[in-house]
Length: 130
Length: 128
Image (cartoon, rainbow over all chains, first blue to last red; front, side, top):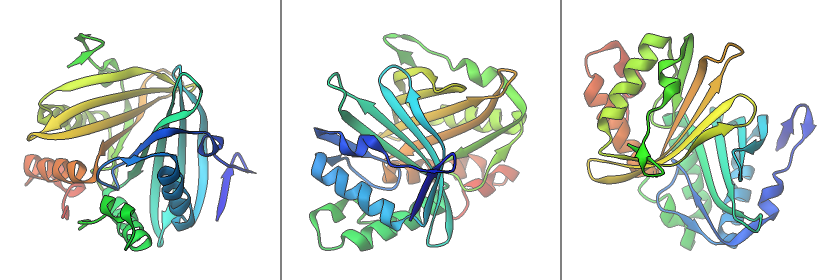
């Protein structure tokens, strides 16, 4: 899966700098994913489901946050994403909010994530997706 | 509607570019034009039972972000709004993101009820 920003390969450095008690929230799931191992696993899984990531912006936002704005697709459906990462005083990623749109694409992704995590403790976040 | 314990009003809402666009996790498609975008956003704000802003301020070089907690029909609803300004300082692009999924879908159904029978309804039709 190609992930590019301004024509260059892009990797989210914050993903390797998660606080132990980081939380992950988003419109594509219910509840908050808790803890570095779970959040890392979910983000990596989502990146595997994306068919590409074309970043329009990746940089500072406010005093202690980082924003990513990218275009993607999932199962052929266009998906637009804004990620807000909030750092704690120690500079670790403390809070992650992944905002997908539009609604129909959100649900395609949610169903794909449910399939990916079926039978695992993380599946609860996507169960009940219509 | 409060931010750091004081009343808050989104000034960007009164500064829309003529060709502003609105997208959202709870919508399909894109709403276009100052009149339509303002109308939708004002109706959306009427659905909130409260808005408590955790952050409202600059984001990146030409953006503004709002991060707030709310509730809709008693359901906790969390929102991130990203506003992008054009070279003239007008609001060019608005992205509204509700979460979690259940709250996003409830909000979408509520907006469909609100706009039923109008040309705007297309953005929420088909919400499961």
